[in-house]
Amino acid sequence: MTQRQEAINGNVTNAMQYVADAEKVSPEVIRKGIADGTIAIPYNPLHKKCIPMGVGRGLRTKVNANFGTSQDYPCIEDELKKLEVSIAAKADAVMDLSTGGDINAIRRAIIERSPLCLGTVPIYQAIAEEKFSVDGIFDVIEEQAKDGVDFMTVHTGVTFDSIAKLKKHPRLMEVVSRGGALMMQWIIENKEENPLYKHYDRLLEIAVKYDVTLSLGDGMRPGSIVDAGDPAQIEELKILGKLTKRAWDAGVQIIIEGPGHVPYDQIVEQMKMEKEFCFNAPFYVLGPLPTDVAPGYDHITSAIGGTLAAVSGADFLCYVTPTEHLGLPTPEDVKEGIIASRIAAHCADIVKKVPGAIEWDREMSTARKKLDWNKQIELAIDPEKAKKILAKRPTSQGTCSMCGKFCAMKVSTEALKK
Image 1 (cartoon, rainbow, N blue to C red):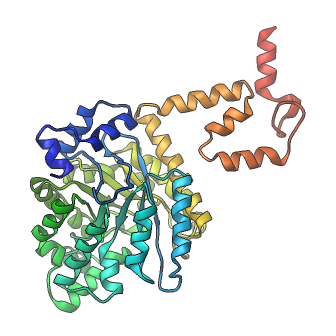
Image 2 (spheres, rainbow, N blue to C red):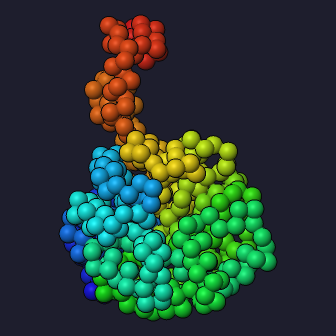
């Protein structure tokens, strides 16, 4: 049985128990959340090395890292290095978005080495290997499920209806989701409905068979802040809400994907809208990015939007790297993106009163008060970078090189002792 079927039957699985221990909540909280659909554990039993991870209401905000080959850069060693970086930087999940080279071999190598749950976007392989037909896309999905993929982004909301909304209400940037654009192109060229939507029950059968969590993709997400909240985006979200109910009835766990580029003052409302339309299913957002003008710094833009999104209801942040909109990320870009998103997630977790969140900050503040540099580095979200900066300009004062003997913490502590 799937995790959802077990939860509905009142059973706490080993995966649920593991997540409960990691989140410092009772197993019943996890079981009930999965049964209600507000929590998901993307965990394919065939991914033998996978450590269970929960995403959803009441849990720590999770961070995902994307990587994968392209046609110009098909080297598997580069992507395995990015996996190592993702694990070291403490991402919670990774997605293989490969479109070049031997896609099956790349995915299998990642699954074999990854303790993090793994997601994919099956349409990429179907298009790259010229297998995109009704049967072809489902063959790719089942093959990936057999390999142990834990969750899959499926663009089920790109349909005749959502495309009609896009045509009636044109955008500045049209469709920026790669999977969404490829699906729309296939629908228009073949004059056929989206096979993942039309044959949704077939998709659910595969998901149940392998206990794959479906991440319903935001193919109509806005790629510019001026397009945010338009009719095509909302139409797709309504479709995803209906498909969520059908998946739950079949025993399949669901995650909903969301924007995208959203002005800062619209982020809260967008999060509320998703929760309302999709019955409080876990929400997985790309960013969101509240401005379009920061190429090279979009990891920072993403963190600014990500904190507010997570405070307002998002459960899962897909990182954005400095190379977003510019090129394929390097391992260092991957690390920068993960750290930025982890900062955003943690800031939100403090507000959401997630168990252990504020305690981390309290421990860091205590170490700073004591001028305990080793402890500060140990507690840092990126210990390696903190250690390098501290070592650049050492002092003999027991303080950092910014203030030296005029360190406010040292001066105030000594003054109060008198």
